[in-house]
Amino acid sequence: MVDVDFEWFDPQPEHDFHGLKTLLRQLLDVDAQLFDLSALVDLILSQPLLGSTVKVEGNESDPYAFLTVLNLHEHREKPVIKDLTKYLVQKSSTVTTLSNTFQALVSPDSSSEVGLILTERVINIPSEVVPPMYTMLLEEISWALEEKEPYKFSHYIVLSRAYTEVVSTLDQEENRPQKRKKAMGKKDLFYFHPEDEILHRHSLGFGGFEYTNDEGEEKADSKRAFQEEGIRPQGHMILIEGSAFEGAVKAIGEFLGPRS
Image 1 (cartoon, one colour):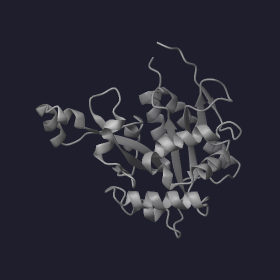
Image 2: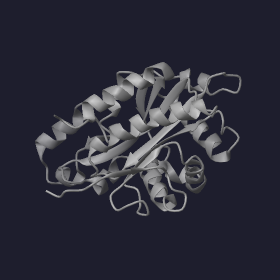
Image 3: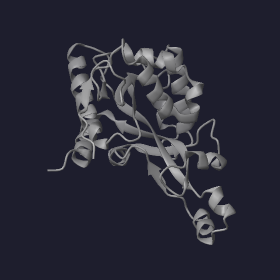
Image 4: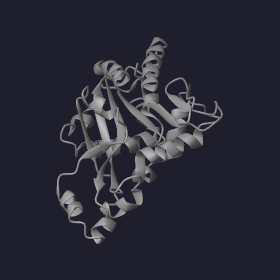
């Protein structure tokens, strides 16, 4: 057991650029190369009073986790937001419960204000760091609205990650019948962010999508860690109505918060 003290900070333009870029690269996985991540980090850091980072070695260290929200309408003319919005529209069209819905919300003639929630953390960071980030985001949005800032969101779209387990080709080469039988069955979907399953209950729709640069199952063994199966990642998105967001945040706290 190792005792670690986690600290929450506002995004720091002078310290967090490289750490946030690394976490965004992890969040977007193989599709990260489709976007100007430097421009995306600069945009996140341009609103230092909205969102938070989690660190363990003080303010000047790299973040181990972050959460922020970007107004897709307010920043619609920025190239990186154009690229992200186009990407999300394309991917949402493959999700049954989101098909056409998200596209209508971000269309040029829509009056909706959609907040894109980006959040990621180092793989072994405990999920207990998540509820404070969401709670602080709610508070920060409330304070920003008092200052007439453009954060009155009608909807939120959460970009996340999931994965399926893929039977190792090494196991198949070893001719293990039980492994082949498992591979033929329906594959369960697992979530890198356990809070996603709570957000589902408060959403208008959600679902997974294949990455544009999907590497296929043949690369699954290279992402095999602490388990027998390989991992095939995929993107995941969750659409939440603005009026339901506070309840969703409360539910995350009840699910992932410290146990008494």
